[in-house]
Image (cartoon, rainbow, N blue to C red; front, side, top):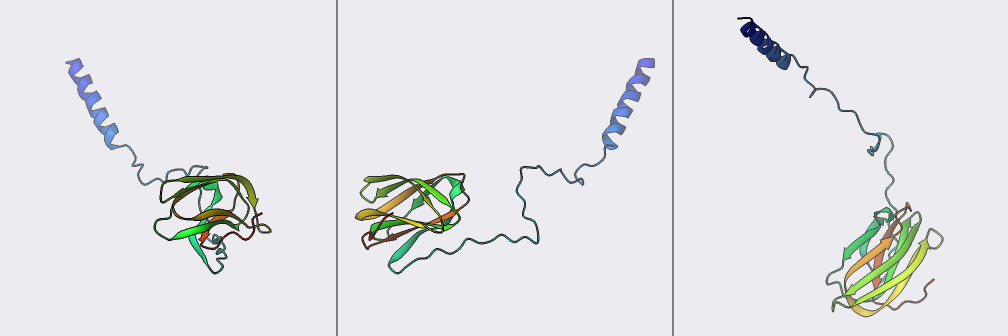
Length: 159
């Protein structure tokens, strides 16, 4: 008889403990330190709009360099003879640009170049072939943004 009373008491205690647990859903979870939050009152500065002279087609809007490698699909936009990479904000270090043409030939430009407000652009000669896609690789530690342009006019000067 004693064992039945103990079993009933243990069962009743377990049931009461399960129903008496405080609701944790109302509590706010603790915010982790590594999360990025935007504070109210501190609006984020938009990237400067790239300078697109006449005859240039924008292939990629300003992109953060910290992304490292960006894949840009160009599609049917025409035959381009010049590709221009421009730093639109801050400093950007370009490492490599891989151009895949419509006929699936590939041209690789391995040229490590730092672009900044005083030296904002670099241009590459493409040869007047239609571009299928671009792969742009930048250093990830920089805080700048860059845009990609193409033109049908040949390169006038490269730095």
